Length: 328
Image (cartoon, rainbow, N blue to C red):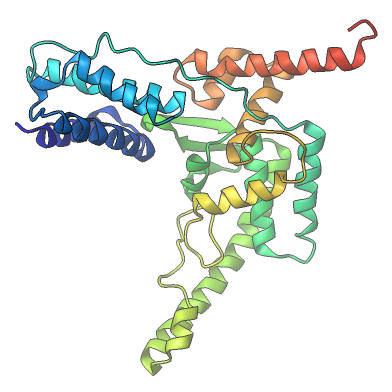
């Protein structure tokens, strides 16, 4: 079998049996396609030619291209998974990737927003709802739910109406590795969600449906300008969060919203939706929540992933100590 054929079989295996997200699959495919291209440039045409020396040379070239340590570490992990599968399938006799090492990815502390700053940012969103703007009401519901339930942005935009239990104040989400979990949300998020579902979402659907009907009329009349201004399809009646045209809200829209919320708040690090997830986790630990409970809440497979938030809490404590203690 050629390298391309073997790689295609491996990616199909990963997709169907490992339950990886689309983002992870794309990263694996990109890494291994680059490995195959590198191997072919060295005259290797079959999987038996992928040995430890070639793998090390491949990572070395990536290092020379100034790839980030995290990217090189991911490449090494992708290669090890591939070579282990080749050995298990009997395609090669020895797993050449077991001794492949890569530099550890530098773990930086995530950005965390103070409670007061976050409350101020949400209050500014609330001010936009004074005139009953449905999009503004939706945005408040997004911000409250991201912080209340520490959702990943993919989990948030993937919510359907049956996933929201307003009586129990919980949402059912599908996390990484197709793992389902149920997480709670509090009273402020409940008020924002209720207002959005009872007022804003129906208003968005009504406006989108009217545009769609106008689009169909324009099709009959042949008015190109009216057709271009209308949405291409009917509103999505299952998705919880909708865009202005009635379709399921996209990830980029949530990124823009959160970045706008946080742009006036001092601090370094990414300003996307994950900052609210980091903030929620850190505030839970600051408030005395058990680390195992936070792990379950976040949907982390490993406790080690959750432990980074203990470092964040420790840094916050040290900063408070330096600021407040007379002999710091």
